[in-house]
Length: 187
Image (cartoon, rainbow, N blue to C red; front, side, top):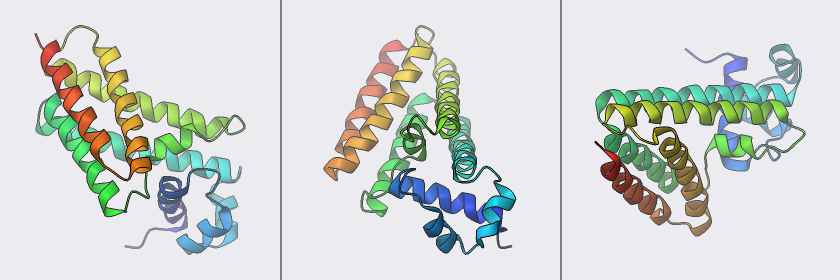
């Protein structure tokens, strides 16, 4: 079944945020790409672009959290980190390093976009919470929250460096170091 206008707007907003960032995600391009009428935006998102992009970021967070939950169900923390980074490597290589994390794009939305930035904060909190659970399940007891924060920060930073360098090496470096930290912290 073909998604309705609201879902097409959200799906395409996520893709455009990953490709262009928040400020370069224009409504005219979004309407054209999603094949929706202009009134669809205001019918489904009365507050306009900010509400739409915040909703897109919240959905991107749900998708990421679902993916992390699935990885966690299949293996330990090392598995989760390795597979999560492998997914990003695939995304970067498949899209010629032209697509990034929608959470980073939303976080950089700017001070006038509090709704979008709040959605990014929620997304990062969801990622950290899942990593905390995975680390605890894998035998890490001390500094679990800090380690989860470090992991999210390192992966997000590596994504930015990978895009800039047109190389997945920053992600590989982060993967190696995070796995080393996990092994050292296990009880």
